[in-house]
Length: 85
Image (tube, rainbow, N blue to C red):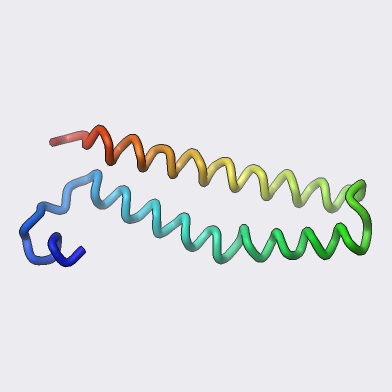
């Protein structure tokens, strides 16, 4: 970031995209995936793993984690291919 701020490197699309998506991934992991995993674990302990609420929360957790994985793969592709350069 310091090199970008000092105009040694240009802040191109792929740099901005990568930094933004990685930031979103960190916030998603710390703000949703981690806490929700803990809540699901407690719910499984109290109601069992066959409960409908557990299944619903697990589906939501898996959907969010798959969406995050797709975004992170897109970061790898964008930073590897460097479109616009």
